[in-house]
Image 1 (cartoon, rainbow, N blue to C red):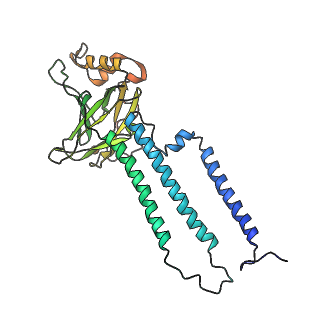
Image 2 (tube, rainbow, N blue to C red; image 1 turned 30 degrees about the horizontal axis):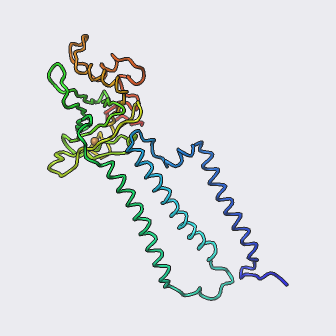
Length: 317
Ligand SMILES: [Cu+2]
């Protein structure tokens, strides 16, 4: 007795063996690809997102990781079904009849409509939970920072402070100098944003959050205040403008410098006093240079650099 033959003249067992080998190879290729990147499992499951430095960022990153895993699971199922259809339902040279002519499968349609609804509902639930935390109202005990965007730079103000010439402490970026937004770690902070001209967007990638900076946010009905519970660790974090705002959109980088609380207090004290060498209130760079605490007190940005605004110069990022 011979084994049953399919129309292609191959035994089903041989075909199964080939498919198993192809699957094994595919899994092996995935494992090699993952392992050879040298990324840890923590890196891999962030799927390209930076490590967050605020509790809100961590929440959003976890939501992102689970959403990406859900999306990948859906992808693997759909790609698998597609590959299965391609591999096992190819027309064979010996096929003479038309395939089975079916088109309605109501139970299957119900399952494949309800299942995505359930998946999306679960995603929506967790999105709302995280969004409610991230987009909460300020409670009033935050350190307030006023962010002003303009073509093409930033001004950061500490409302309620006064330097010896009667102005609130402020840092304004220039073409030659990347503005440093000095913040304390381990303290709630609220950001109030507005633009002097066009729409910009205030984005600190390590916060895993950005908000558009509108001219006249009140008139535009835009919620221009947002809060973080704290910055988890000292460090320098690059910031970017994330809304196309004209010719020098790409040159609006800034830097968040998160200092331990004692150093932040020292910084604010300096900014509210006179620098004996210039007889002017300390600028951000001068105050940091005066504090001299190593890379954390670098008077210039360490995560980015000023760009040459000459339009004939090719930009190298
Ligand atoms: Cu901008």
